[in-house]
Image (tube, rainbow, N blue to C red):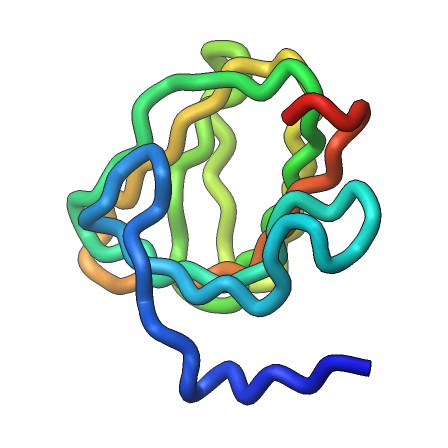
Length: 115
């Protein structure tokens, strides 16, 4: 059993844009195939550049706010209550062009053990 007091966790930069901060609730290696489980606050004007993961599925649950997710060059506007899954190999980026913070919880699941 592991209990994490999330309010005590440090905020660290996400790998694709260190100005965007996250809290990692469960890190890689703690649960088989789980790459990370955490939360992010995505501030107005912040972006994550287009990238892909060949061996990981990512799932984002939007808790508050609104953001643009580009998946394979298709714009998806996500809002509070939406859940979006990005499959391995899909090119994706995120942008918050809106005037309010967006928060989400998210996790990544390895589809092999190399990532």
